[in-house]
Image (cartoon, rainbow, N blue to C red; front, side, top):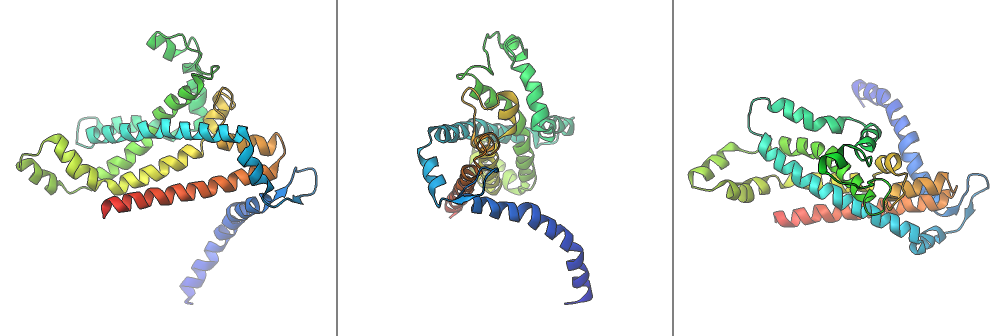
Length: 279
């Protein structure tokens, strides 16, 4: 090993040590605790797969899982479509285009907690949304409306994130292909469907994977707006309440392990699907 490599390894050691201490060790600890009955106040007791068997029959966990799926699909499918449409409209040079892109990205740069506090006012029965649409809906205290309220707020916040990714992808597409298609008489829709969309497939794959992960990791808006009530308790909030309100660390760890493997399987399936379409 050269002196330069030795200096580099020495300088990177503190960062690697912190990563191992605060990322790798907690992850391994969660796998370990998922096999124990541990309540923070008493010694851990080995129970094998009992925590996983309990989850398989727990209706509250099943409801949290369905709530997470509803939130993920309801939020990120429209967000991806809107982001792609906006990117197609904004990727051309136009006056004030940079400012418009910045406006769309501002919600992304703002924390979920701050956004949720603002939207608590918007979703108030006498708030901006009801007044604008002429509705009389109790958005945050109704099981029929609360899940949709979270979806509406999250679509507004998350669209800008994917808009930036699609804009980056569009900026790298070869202009010669579009000019040739235009000369051959291809209309705007045919150029989009047969050229733009296939060439954007790698970006779309990344966006799809990130959308699923972000959706299943949702936590803050549910806590701030409804505290998991009215059909909005998602899996991460279920883990938090199981661990710190019910002091069942083993069961909470089992849920985390289960979701870890779910995310891996879904991500691999998405990547395989996009690769198959490329073949």
